[in-house]
Every structure is written in structure tokens, then in C-alpha cells.
Image (tube, rainbow, N blue to C red; front, side, top):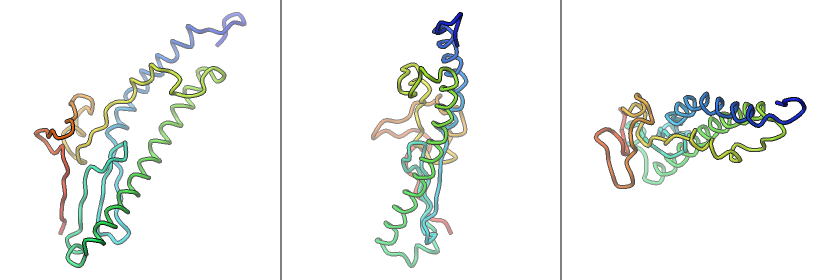
Amino acid sequence: MTNGGEFDLEGLLEGVQKFQQDVAGSTQRLAAEVADAWSDDHLVHVWVNARGVVIDVEVDEREFAAATAESIAAATVQAAQTAAATMGDKVAAFQTELRQRLAGLAPAAVTSLTDIPELGTVQPPVPTSPPGARDRRENPTSHRQPTSGEHGDDQDGWDFTLRA
């Protein structure tokens, strides 16, 4: 990215703007991603959003009958931690890809995504609704997420399910 031996700042800025536009769609899809995991004893199934926040929990009704409060709590924590770790891996892989693409624009000039304030806009809100909720099926940035204590007209809160 040089122009007659000089650093082409305008070219770099154009490249970063194109990069930002290209990445916007994929970050929206990542924001709507979920990861899930079963506890080792198959008692509890947990889903987390892109930030690793639990958004849905399902308890196997057959296993529930013989479970104790302690075993349910332990299974929930274990499944939540596994799902969060899986999501963490997805997010880390995505961030690595972004850093590699950005480094290709100016390898010596860019050390971190956080060094470029304009890239903050490629971090859309992450839904807290359960898998299959309307805001996950539609454009994830088209709906305002409820604030603490608010509930939308869809399944924006916890969905605790016993399955037979």
C-alpha cells in the first residue's frame, strides 16, 4: 500500500471501510448464533448466545424424576460452561479471521482490531431470546432487545422446558 514509496493512507482507509462493510453481515449472523451442550449425564441441555449468556434450558423429564436439586444444579452449570466454551471457540475463530483479514490491509500498521474505533460498529447487539425465537429468524438487528426487567411479546425471557 504505497504510492511512489510513500504510505497510502487513503488507500488504507478505503480498504478498512470496505472491510467494515464486508464484515457487517457476518457479524450480524454471529450475533444470532447459539451454542448448546448437554450435561454429561444427559439431564440438562443448555443454549447460550454469542456472549455465552444462557438463553434456554431443557431438562430431560425421564432423568429429572430421579434427579436431586444438587444434581440438577451441577448438570446445569456443567452444560452451561460447556456451551459457553463452545461459543467462545466460535467467537475466537471469527475474531482471528477478522484480524487476519485486517492485517492483510496493512500488516505493519495494524496491531489490533480495538485500535480502530470505526470497527466498533461491526459488533451488533446479541439477542437474549431462546433458539427459534422470532428475532433469531428475522434480522437480528431489526428488534430492540428488552432491557433488564422488560419482556417482549415473543419468547424473549427464559424458556425452561421439561422434555418427555
